[in-house]
Length: 343
Image 1: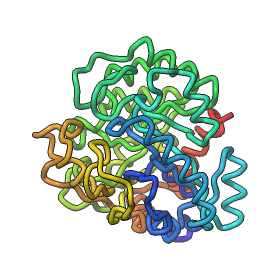
Image 2: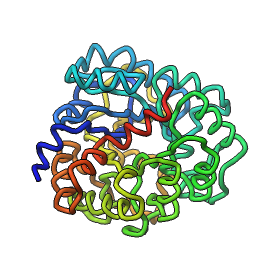
Image 3: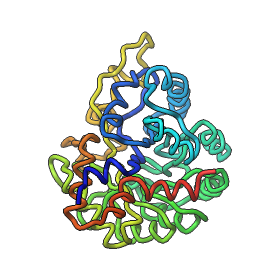
């Protein structure tokens, strides 16, 4: 089996990037790795609960204005048909996602606002509890009334419900509540690596039962190794496929290229801090609340470079996946969910 040819012919879909978006960050250096990897679709993380909800809006505003100017190899899209058109043009299709419902500022009507601006999936929480539900590193209090209201609104407007980073009770209740498929955009099986960010077999099967997809990430801590490897990403994908069938597996590496913070004339504030950058180790050191001590983050993490994604395809072939299976895992499965949910 020619895995390289399968990769070249497949729609390659990365449902979540790992860098922290900053409104003044140079965009071409951030996004070039995905272009070099031959990725066709990328969801850019525009905000998470660690930052004020207003930062999410600033990031979206910056991306919508500056992407066509600074990264013309990208195309902002709003539909699956747009993705196909961008791919035909040789461009990287881009939408946005949000990690945590603090970005709603307590108002479910913000869902439509974000959807109209290009957000196509949203998580409940980023590791810690909020108004909508529980984070995976906090007391598992479950989905709230506000969280249920938000799910209903996400279903209505066409935004995908994303259960990554969230607590067990919250995710199970969310999967029962949603009337359309849900995803874990970037979560690995807990049975292979017992870490709070990874998910149980029950969560994996629950997601598949909705028609959804579990995206395997390439973060070393969640893969259970010092340095993330393509073989281990494929091993985690194979485990999920064994539970659910390959049609419910995707790859979202959560890759974060190491870049320097942009120099700006803006004064330092408690919110931005000095020398802010997309390096997660620096972010954790500034505010360990969202990455609790004893959970491994303090030791540092590595990411599988997105440009090694073709090697993952090769490892999937070695693991016995068929060409259609590999094409689905690389992007076809996430595309199916988008076709069912986006409006």
